Amino acid sequence: MHGQRFVTREHAKQAVMDWMAFYNHRRLHSSPGYLSPMQYEQRWYEAQPKKAA
Image (cartoon, rainbow, N blue to C red):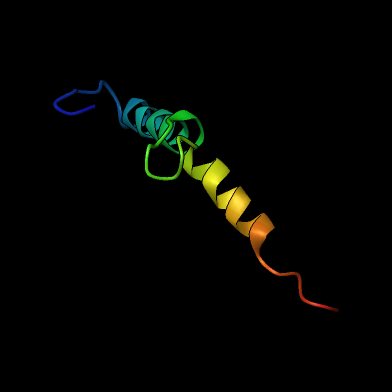
């Protein structure tokens, strides 16, 4: 998106939302073992001790 010009504000918003979806849900990162940020967060939550109700 760097240097990209958009016809409308809505086109710009959609491009940002598409980039965020890619970055957070599909792009793999090497530091957390080639997981997406969402996969890493989900595994972190699953590893937390469960509190008794």
